[in-house]
Length: 294
Length: 224
Image (cartoon, rainbow over all chains, first blue to last red; front, side):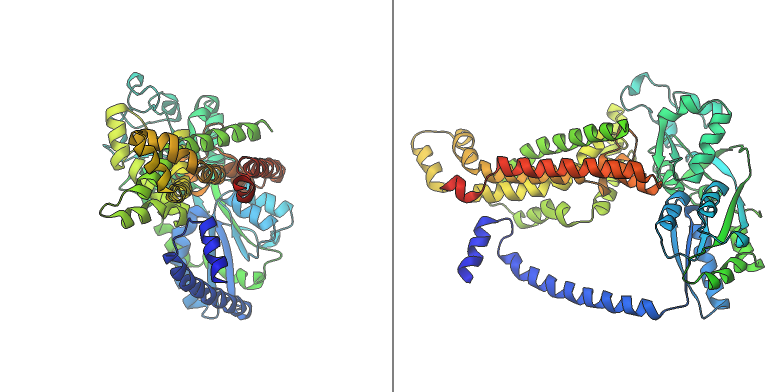
């Protein structure tokens, strides 16, 4: 037995035998974790009152602030949030994710959910409104940097923040963060605005795709891009690191629809949360975060 | 489906560069660790192995902090050379290289440790210099183990996702590797694209494994 083991070690000498001991300890801990997780799974089965909310990433801070208010008003219910790009959340719903309430950052994503019979159309309401803005890294960061990685010295430096979409076409703005239009509403709004201005063809090659709007915000805050398209509410979260250059005119107002899911395990309870979003207390939190009334 | 082929070409390029860099870095470090004792050796060993056990997102974050344009190295590169690494395929290579490094390092170290010192001593008595001993005795004897490590590293670099996504983003044709393209297609609910990409990825991985079996045949066969 021992012989066999040393032979195994000789064949795969990547792990010195000293590590074998810690590996058995780790294995013991892993077993405990697996058992605990298994028990947790059973526990989850009886926890019937949890409401699962899939919401646009831009709502994350506001909804996390609303959660304790809702749970105080409805002690029997606990909220569980799943934040992401609206398109990514829809893709999860399409595949049968057990979600009770869906809030998307655009009408199109909710329309698609409705067309697939995923949401209870009668319950659909617009919860909040928002604005699309172009943000740039806060002063002193990007203004002194050469922008193009391949021919830095030949490229003019962004001397001042952009004032209109047209300014973004300048070579000084070499990298522009935008939500991936295929799954991120903020990216679709941005693309539509740029198309309307006849600038999409010029700007598309300079875009850096983000998987949700907060990622685009992060790219700007870190100074990795020269500008980015985010919501006004996102920009307010990083006021020290990003600066709002201008508000982007959008063809339609940006309204966030909310609806309960047709197949949600707790969709009936989800209605309570949807109703709560329209109470004065919740609207005050949303307003504090910069969201407008629908 | 042009995007898939672009992503495949990019993935192979990134993994190829990462493997080539690790051939130098991993083999060098492996040889150093197998031959010399120095203070802090154990700590350095653990640090160099860390990328294998750490979540790629943690690694991606470290990279972002170091090579980002506001990071220590990144700011220096930007000021002196105007180079921005983040969102370039070179950043993907850096991420893949670091993630795959321990696989080459560990394999090379073990392979060098298994080389019988008698052969090296014999070469020394015959007047060969240390560099010559490394190139003509140690390396050829350790080569099989190193090759196995390199193949694992190539496979790991092909599948690298987390750290790459964080430092290279997802720019079609520039930094969008196969694994990232799959993620993006699934996020967008584009199942047709996802299916095709998954097929391509699976076939590539299978091909790597099969060629690995050819390049590094069983120990018994080779020794016998």
